[in-house]
Amino acid sequence: MKITTHPSSATMKDVAIQAGVSTATVSRAFADPEKVSAKTRQRVESAAHALGYSFAPSFPRLTHQYWRTILVLVADITDSFYSDIIRGIEIQARQLHCLITLFDCAHQSVESFMVHSRGGIENYNGIIFVGLSPVHHDPMPACAGVVINEYSSGHTFPTVHIDNLTAAFDAVQYLIQRGHQRIACLTGPEELAICQYRRQGYLQALQRHNIPLNPYYLARGDFSFASGLAAIEHFLQLATPPDAIFCHNDKMALGVLHRAKQLGIVVPKQLSIIGFDNIEESQYADPPLTTISQPRKAQGEAAVSVLVAMIEGKNITHRSYLLETELILRQSTR
Image (cartoon, rainbow, N blue to C red):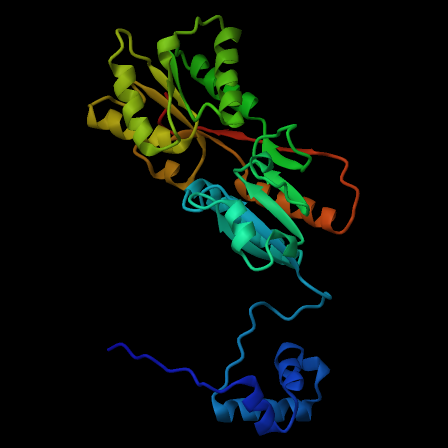
């Protein structure tokens, strides 16, 4: 049996009248009890209990004068890639006494938010762009800002990022060291800087080991599972199919892996597959996916730390904050 409780309609003013104090005293009794005498606090608590009034603060009682407010703009909040970044932002924000507002940019524009929201961006102490570039927004935010994305000279905000070119180079070089010569590359959207760097890393690894580029081994995806399914269909129709595929993200790699199994291709005996990002799903694939891990939680934490330093007026000497990646070896490569 489902039991639904009905909250009391009593207000803070009702509690104040019942206890014979001001509403400000009631507020202090709950939010800052050390500022209220024990006798007064007991009267307030007794009145609240009698009226069924419940005080639920939005955030813990503070020792600082105020909490900073940070707006976090996320390219697509439903994309599992961003989950660890957001978690890192939230953890560090709490440590540094910041309140976070998340805004999903997948189907709504920042410009619309600025126009229609109450107060707009100017009411925030700072802003973090996750998977987005500030140069795409007009006007540019006037408050302090940090970008979690690929570094760009097109804006003045500090950027927390990884070396996508070197990470891609290391992934492809590993495939070459395992004996692969026919290595395909499934890229992400061409207009994204991170994809341009990852493609360059792929090309440089082939060049370093004197492996000629087969232009048919380059296919473009859109970071989705479905584009991975389509890509392997394309590769398998070639006269000489690849024996390894480097994918620009894990979702596409999982699509490639899924369709390969359906077609009876044995991974990694007949085909090696490497992804990028090390999202949680990659370790549960069959077989588990070899991938490049980027420290997404650490990226979120670093972005908040840099932003708070800017808000506090500290001198930020660097515009580029580079974090290390790691090649995670699993059973999708031989």
